[in-house]
Length: 165
Image 1 (cartoon, rainbow, N blue to C red):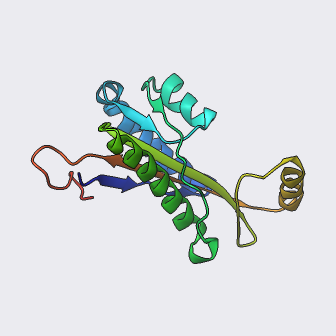
Image 2 (image 1 turned 30 degrees about the vertical axis):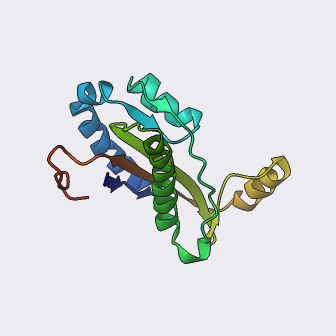
């Protein structure tokens, strides 16, 4: 079935802080509905799980995505890169569940990267790589980009949800 999706990008601490306040208010207004929904988190991130399950008490099921984060970074800005990674992670988990005949109410995909001197930095491969990354960031400035993709089935009767796909 066709999917509806939302991409919720944020970047920079100041911008993310303003957006987080708005998003939190919207989530709190819909918390009872969300707590009764079958929500899948397409991530193994302990912090994301803590936010959704411990703080918001959503009871999300964790199914980490197997999407290989191998997009060509030269084709993306940091913001569009995290948005596309988040979307692909959510789509991979949705497709895997659909192949099993399962349709959750919502699949959440997300991605976060650091950008420094125009380069997109992802999770370090190992400890020496982590030390190297931290040294390169020390004493300078960097930006943190997060992208979130929300995939859900269309409303009964078809059509796009309010606000469009």
